[in-house]
Image (cartoon, rainbow, N blue to C red; front, side):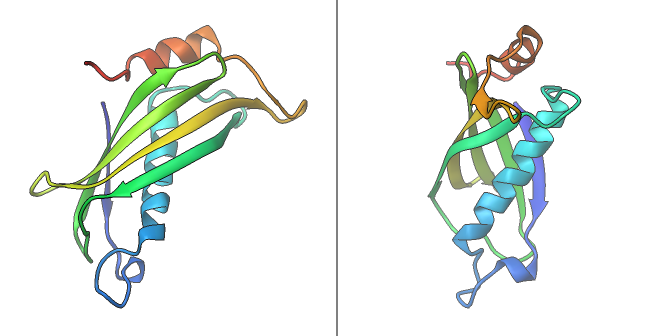
Length: 131
């Protein structure tokens, strides 16, 4: 499992005092990009596009709260993979949000998806969720 931490900044909260829902997608992206580097799935050039993402909000997060984002691979396809993420309160372990994203290996010259390499597939398999 891949872990990444975020500390909520004041500008990410709204008039109700909690994190505005759009900021979760920024947190998830920040964690997702760090996952790409740590899992060693990037080549010399950026070759992925985000095809789909969703987030279910479970509870609230607040200013100065430290969030831990845990990422695992839900499935690996021919040219894509699903990244499942959970946002937790680092101190209590309570679930704040659950998210999933579909990421596609993409050739920007041809503007088409392309199969994941064996090396990328092998590196992703290290993060597959255990049942």
